[in-house]
Length: 171
Image (tube, rainbow, N blue to C red; front, side):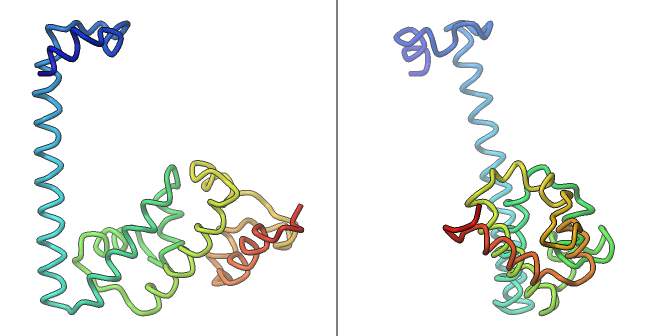
């Protein structure tokens, strides 16, 4: 079927060095990748179910929140992600990501605030610019960077700043 599509729509592969005869091989590769992705998703779901059974539904919800926050941080250094998640060491965050360490209420509350901050920020700034924004000195923050304030436990000030970005009179 994909060969037929390539024959009808040759511009789909034009300029890529791929010919219509290569499409079945590409389809096989895509199918293999799709199968591997499904296996990983299945493994993640099984791990989440196991964690929920072992540690309660709250743990699974917190793990999901962590995943949502991590997905909203493209290009952000892992060290900065650790600051955002209140993980004192990268190994601790890795253990939380893999469900090997329970997330405390304090960390979950921090992640909820980080999520609000990112939701506000990404309404006015591309997610890819998050890392640069975290390291930009901002006058209203006393010429400190958002990541420095967050590291000092002042996330609430950064959340308020991002809320102000949504004010129509901001400018």
